[in-house]
Length: 100
Image 1 (cartoon, helix red, strand yellow):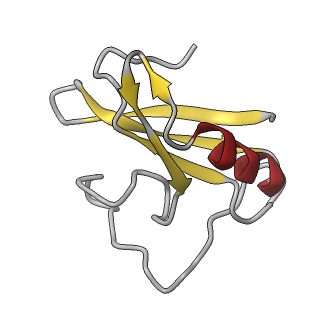
Image 2: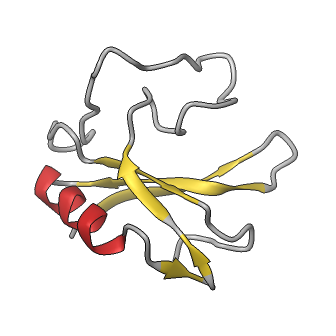
Image 3: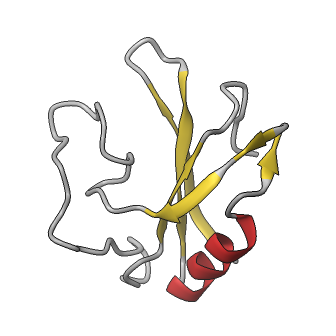
């Protein structure tokens, strides 16, 4: 699918936290990525992929002063198309991973 944005989440020390957020233009592209990438390996590690449920991305932990727990079942939208459910959380990535 068409990826609008991909970010590796980093701690305050600048090191990777082993997870990231990927925003697709369309919800169906994000759904396809979940189906095709869930439980696959990336750099020898099994990754998990799910819809991001936290405002502003980040999977829900230690995102700084504007962080908050999402909840309430909200889905988050593509900033370009406004398409709901187009943001994915990717976890268990190698700390050496980077977006290319």
